Length: 358
Image 1 (cartoon, one colour):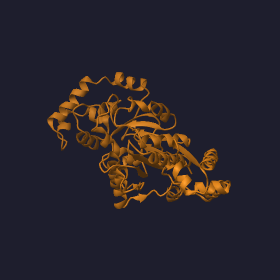
Image 2: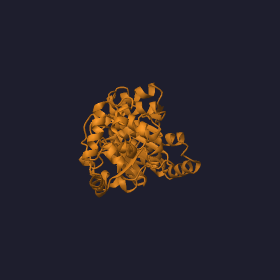
Image 3: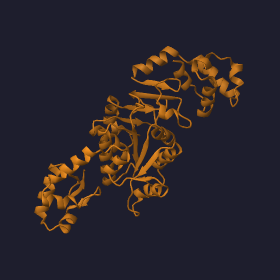
Image 4: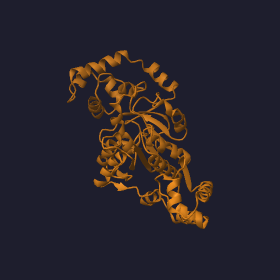
C-alpha cells in the first residue's frame, strides 16, 4: 500500500521520484521519514517536500488499495522480486507497473513487434505470420496495442496459441483504442496489459513515446515492420539500441514512404527480416524437424501448384500478374489458387490479390 501511495504522489516529476527511491529504497521508509530528512536529499527542493507531506495527509491507504483490487488491477514495483528483471536493468525503469493479467516471465524469450498504424496488406501479413510462428515456439510477443502492426503482432501471437503483452500509453483501466476491445479482453488471459501510468490516466500523445522504452525494455529483440521516417516505431528502435537489444527491420521499396524508416534502420546496422523462417533461424528456433516438415508440405503440391506458388512472396500479387507469368489460363489459375488456399499456402488479402502464408 505504501508503494501505491508513493507512485501516486502528485507534483513529483519522474526524476524527483527516482531520486527519492534511490535514496530511501522503500516507500514505507520515505513515508515515515521526517521532513528535514527528506529536505536534505540532494536534488530535492521545498516544493517536493511539500508534495510528499500533502500526499500523506490526503491519501486514503485502505480505500485506494481496495478500489485498485476491485478493478482487477495488480501492481508491481522496483521494490518487488516479481518486477520484470529485463526491464529493471534499463536506464530509468519505471518505478511501478500496473497490470491486468500476468507479468512477462523472465525465463521466456521475448520479441517486440512494432510498426505503422496505417500499414500495408503486406506489412500486416508479415507481422501476423511472424508473431504466430514465434508464439508457436513459446516466444512472448510485446507491443503497444495500437492499430496496425501492433494489432497484427498481438493477433498473430493469439493465432499461435501464445502469450502477448500490451504496454499502454494510458492507464490499464482504459481500452485504447476502443476498437481493440477484443484484444483488451483476450490478452490478459495468458499474457498481460501493462502500464507505468496510474489507473485513470488518459491516452495523451506525450505519453506514448515514453512508454516505448518499456516495450523495448521487456524484449530481447525489437522488429520494426513498416515505419515512416518520423514515427514512434523508430523511437522504440532507438531505445532498443540504447538498451543493447537486437533490432531488426523489414526492408521495402525505396519509393514506399512506409519503408523509409525501416530502410534507414538497416542502413544504421539493423538486421534484415528476409523471411519468417530466416528470423527463426537467427533466434536458433528453426530446427531440423521444422525444415523437414516444411519440405514435406511442399512435396504435397502438384506440379502446377508448385509453379504458381514459386511466384509468391509476402507482397500481394494480383490475379492478372499470375496469369501473365504462367502458361495457364485464367480459369486454370483460379483453380490452382483455390487448391493452394485449401492447403494453407496462400491467402487472398483483398479481392483478386494473394500472398503466401508459409
